[in-house]
Length: 584
Ligand code: BDP
Image (cartoon, rainbow, N blue to C red; front, side, top):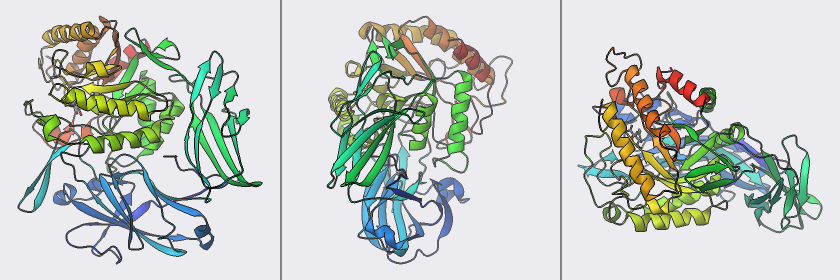
């Protein structure tokens, strides 16, 4: 799906701001004004804008409403209503009529709305829910006790709900660019760009132009042409360079559509247990992260994202994973511009029937691939992520699931299909991974042969060998050697490792939860990584403390594994990371 932009032929209006909001507690007629509402900021989660706990944690349906005006002339154009994301599922009503539905909380969707739209005042309502179950991604166990819905999440972050990203109304002519993928092949200094372009409606001529960062034209042709960049400026990690592919569509001599797609030129290769970007081995340094900030919840918070990436850059980090769902389009664009390397993850988190997330210590085996049925929604979310993100140079790998039950019968068949889909959908055919959970170790895991890179979430010294770092080191090394022996050609990447740490807690004896223990923990892990040349990266868990469900080991309903607090105060380990990464 194209990123919305205002151009010579397209207009773009922002509909966000303060909307009316109401929890559904009976029938709501979409044709009538919402009654008994309160005000809610959009985009943002609703949960952290209310003070009542019951309301905050409600499982069910919610209504949002706003009014907006449309100029008379605008109705001659094609009008599209676009949502950056609504979490988890949405039904959209314009002027009392249902326009459409969307399943999934982390990708954009849009509807052509001309038949519902009026000149002058319009009324827009969204009915959304935060419902998750055995068929959805993310996954949860849904219960209905005495008419009360409740959910037990199979994941470790708060199930924020709301209109999380922008709501926009844009226009195009009746002839318009529907899809573009900037496909290219590199040969030395030259890049041959052969864009895949889909146009709806009649036209006479298409002019495709590639512009460099200064806006200078470097190649031009029609929609069938291969365009050549003669001396290519590569997109490099932390040294970004972006070109712009401009598509102009004409009917007779009249320009009817004009659109710009940014892209970067780089190569990716996985071989000899290394990950190569532009022919050079790339070592991942960085974080698993979350869209999670004060009052916004999971709502888009661009200043926060900008600050976080600036902090990461200063620390010498070069990468992040969009754990555990696709992040906002703005974040992806910023990553492109700053040269961050991204592992883009679909919201398939919790595909593990008996995973008790607040870690009551239980890893009871289940029959995930029999009793859960997420395949259709998993593929839908995957398609929407890849359709949105395929041209981002920052994205170097797809993560098609976080910590599934990859050791239970049926896992191989399930993931063979999902990974085949991902490869098929991606015009760039990037590497694909499945992030592995610690109890599906090298001996038990059934899907390592399917992935390009082995990505491990490991907590030696925390969930296992708690407080015993010497033992943790030994066990980690033993496990790593097994993985390497099984898949000698595949790079191994740590996508999670970490220890809960209460900022300000200090301990003479470096007790777990103290800032000293977090330093020791990371030092111990690094010592092992550095002794294994096939380890090709370290992404810590987590960049910052984040909100989750309350639990005995979730102090203040937060996961405290951040190297920063939720309000971005650094913990002691930040110094160590900075020294390590700036020299690595
Ligand atoms: C892993 C999950 C992650 C959790 C983390 C933890 O991938 O979402 O937050 O462990 O327990 O299971 O801190």
